[in-house]
Image: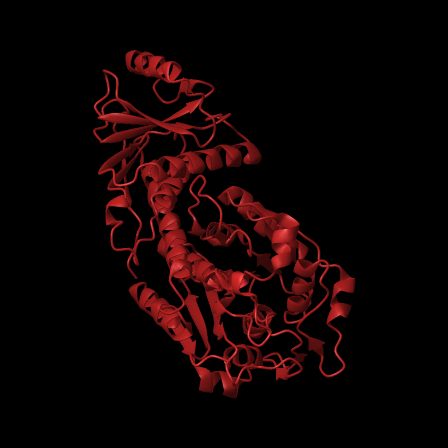
Length: 496
């Protein structure tokens, strides 16, 4: 898959000696950070900061000519807001690292086509170096595969500056892997559904898995039919491009724990016979963002060499209103053995997830997480930037703690017991469309019926955060964001 990302390198060169077209420096509370040992250069630059009245507001940028004493041609000042580079304690440190990620991302978004960039943000600890690396890698992302004139917008070389030590160099390498995985997820989500459909998605995964010598299995329509995957078949049968179930396995020697990820992979969602309004279809190429997130997180886990067994399940289908499409009132025989009456063909994501969750749960993993652009109710409840997390208390707590560490916004939500009654059906065990109020919670209640009672399971609804329809901010571009990739990687580190 072509990449629109710019890889980074690491150097312990001092800020004043760094040679680049642009040196990026952080500003907080009207002070330029990181120049404590270069007082003359710092004084000259702070005079410039005051002259242009640059306050250091978080995310703000200003490019100026480099004063005497710097080896770089120009300097990009980027605001860090209220920032403490020596912050201690989990919450304070996480906040500091996220400020660095966002500042690095804002800087790279402001440097279209610059041939060489040196990132001089205040990265004292190894964790801070990793944060800057991730932010820079995400901010440097440009999706230009389908554009004929924007190749010159991709930033050139990017060098992360920090202390000289093996620990800091390793942190940079880890950050680069995490940023690359997030950007690969973005590439998948941004690819038009004309080119990304179940079969081609599966092939891309096979190719990337082969590069890492991972086991990738793909079930086609005949195998799905024979295996009783009624949810996947039912959702995908309205399209001429049939469904797939992809399983990717990473099994390092000596791994004692097993994490399993399931990602909703609707490569385009028209709503099926319960057709969406035209305006609601514009961004439905993003309905496979969950599948993109889980598989790229697994690839990153493998690239990082984490000592944990990891499995990714990708139920892939295109939800179209063809002549063979599932009709409202049809009953599907699910992989788990349960039956589901379809009352709304636009509530399709839970159907493909249910089939994959049944297989994933059967392997009894230590941690089971599904990720999905599942409900519009998530956006109503939590907005466009905060994902909802539901499920077993232990898994839900691990996911939200991992999200905080990774710098992603996620919020724990309940699954009220009364929600399940909204799926009562006269024709089947369940119907697929539940109550409108609390729809995010209701969808989780439906999914819970397809995992065992003692499963350490969490469901992440990324409907809003997965695709940015507003303006770019921090390291987040317009369109695909790569939501949940970093949280899943962090969760794999934390599972015990």
